[in-house]
Structure formats: C-alpha cells, structure tokens
Length: 410
Image 1 (cartoon, helix red, strand yellow):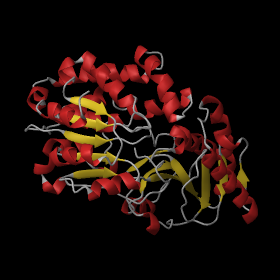
Image 2 (image 1 turned 90 degrees about the vertical axis):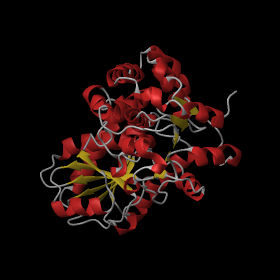
Image 3 (image 1 turned 30 degrees about the vertical axis):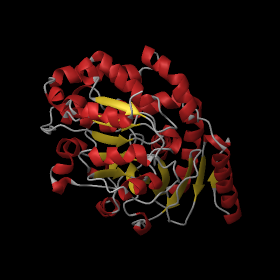
Image 4 (image 1 turned 120 degrees about the horizontal axis):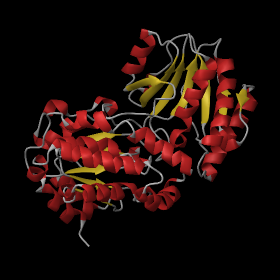
C-alpha cells in the first residue's frame, strides 16, 4: 500500500497535465459527479450512505438535506464561474487539505477552488468520517480519468510525525479545517503556508418587520441542518424585546414540525445531558422555555445577552435586545448571521467587525454557493500561489474552540 508521502509525490508532478484539461471537460465531470452525490437514489449514494450514516449519526433525511445545502450551489453556472477564474498553479507540487470529521461533504468547498487553480491536492480524511472524500474523488476520476492521479484522499492518525513532518515540509500550501487542537498542532508544525479554518458558530437576527412565523420556519432550518454541527449552524438568536416571546413560541413550533420532515440524528449521552441541563437551568432561573421531545429542539428566552454555544439537540437561546449585542468575547469566532426583518447598518457593522463573513436570509444561511469566501479567503488564489506566491494573500482564521472537537467548520 502506498504511503501518504509517496502518494503526495505522485500528485505533485501532475500540475502541467491538469492545466491542459479544458474547463468545459472539468465542469462536465464535476456537475455529473456532484449531481450523483446529491441524489440519494444514485448508485454512488446507495453504496456510500450506509457507512456515512453510521459515521455521521445523521438521519437519512438530514444527510440528504445537509449535502444539498453544501453542494447545490456548486453546480452549473456557479461552478463554471469558479472554474473560469484566472488563478492557476504554474509549478509542480501538491497542497494538503486536512478535513474535519463533520459535516460530511465539506471537501467540496476546498476541492472546487483546487480544481479551478489546477492544483494537485492530498486530502486527509478524518478517521471518524473517512468515506465521503475518497468516494467522491474516485467517482470524479471515473468520469474524467485525467483527474485520477492529481487528487487523493487518505486517512492516518493525526499527530503521527513520521507521516506528517515530510508532508508539511513538502506541501506548497496546507489548508486545515477542524477544532482548536488540530489547528494548534498545525501552527506549531511550522509549515511554510497555512490557511486554517478553526471552530466558529453562527447566530440569528430577528429585526423590525419580520413575520414571526415565517422567520421561525427559516431559522428552524438553519438550526436543524447538520444537527447544529456546522459553523453555519445557528446557536443563538437576537430579537427585538417586543418580538422575542412571540418568536420563541413560533420557533419551538417550527422545530417540532421540522423534526417530522428532517428527523434529528443519533445523539449521545453528552448531547442529551447538555440539552436537559439547559432546560433545568431555565426552570431554576424562571425563564420562559419551550420544547417537547428532547432531541426535537429547546427554545429558551434569556434576557442575558451574552452568547453561549448550544449544547446541541437543536437547543437555541433567544436574547431580547434593543441595540448592539455584546460581541467582544466572540471576535473572530463568529461565522454567519441568519437575518429576518431589518438589520440596522450599525448592527451589521458590529457583526462584520467581529469576523462574520456571511449574512443570509433565515433559512438560507447554510445554503452556501461556489462564490462564498469562507472567512473572506479566496482559496483558488491560495492554491494557485502556494508558499512561494503572493505574501499579501496569506490568511488564517484560528479562533478558540467553541464546542470541543465537534465545532466543525464549514
């Protein structure tokens, strides 16, 4: 069996052949492959789903919806626009991308920019979810054999210096998604060029003019997608004081209804204990809260405006607030805002200054597309120029952990 280092050396020499592939050939193969992986009835998904459902703990409906939220915006014209961008890797060499355990399908957000840059990549799949990336790469390679030798996904135990030291030394670029421990380890490895996406969380905003029922349905979807395990999952919602109680009740109803169409996945003891503790704390503090089945969602109206991460199981706090939320403790640890109603310019600027890189209507926060730049970072340019390229493009986003190692990043 080939070692990761040997695989990387094989990939490194393929950049010239990658540049020779016409955009339209790459686009056709990409669209066909991605469409198959978004179709739960395709042969690829029928082969993949049993193991993927086991490793992720998502429900079948939750898996399909989650993959769609990542992938549907990367098809067709959106993918074509990315592939036609001018950035190209001009020298030999490979890049290394370290993928998180969750959410599944996150490889798409780094793979399309790598294809656009014609940059060979070795993907490190998590031992907790080693299936999606190699299956997708193999399917794409069958459709366009010229890509087969330029991309690979392998799995090894993180921190194995015998494997990682030569890879870090040779890689033109290292892109890492994951928890605080993963990012810290890579930073201390003194790689030549690191783009790091550490754990973040997202929020909701319900402003003037929002229809509480409509806002609740949209926000429920942003909470339930990937069972709150992605960095675009909503943990906390800020709402006008007069609106908060009505919105909280509507959100609880929406989460209960959504659990029928988008059932929650498998939960563990820590998840259940965290959600139960949140309910008990609300009772002790005399707070209004709503919720039926423990895993179908808990909504707590909390006058304390400080942000606290959700314990999971679709638990969310609604903070009544009339002005700018207190964000100082969360600078560079916030990812997106699901917006219902009007958001004043002062509020938006405060979120932007705290590091928020995505604003979207409630219900669409997790439905990203090929044009979204996670953290404002242009990965196609990063892949193209690598460690010897444009120093002004170096970017890392490495916030502190918010939910131990489950705070995966999208």
